[in-house]
Image (cartoon, rainbow, N blue to C red):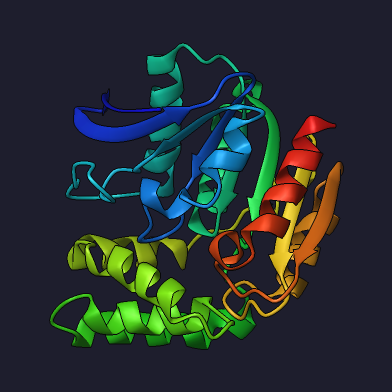
Length: 258
């Protein structure tokens, strides 16, 4: 197990690596970081060479002045080049799933398989109000405290104060200005035309009580990708990876092993 840093377009970004075997790259969601995959490392590293990174602006990576989803995808590509990885399995959660879609658009030859967890391919009309609520909360808040509370409540279904506190701790550390820029960027994405062109085996993971990216949205994504399978994690909301990691991890490992 080791941490390191690499250069991505002149920015110093942090990464983490453990395990051996086929490469599995973990791409975090908005406001998250390497530590957000804590409940995955042990299970995944038994089978794969697991690599996670702090995308630019998050965790301990440098914060750029401007941002686009294309930049995030390039971070993943630059990390693979740094580690000498030619092709990898990619797992993206929430915003990380969006980054995976953009990565496939730019570098399809570098992707072996794809796991899209609790994510979106475009902002649905039904989710526009919640999206606007987040932006207003960010604009009116002096720091990340209120948005951290909001995210924790929306993303954890079970009565698990320790999990909500973990989420709040991670979110509070974010640069508010950068977080706001990325939130606005996600409101503009649309990969509806790309999904039917994805040719690698794909697993779509939804969660029973996810109101941020509801199961119906995951089913729509799976229906548009030719080789997609779909699984739903029970008794969990948006952050199924920490709320029900046993089921989440099992679905990922079983899929990738096949």
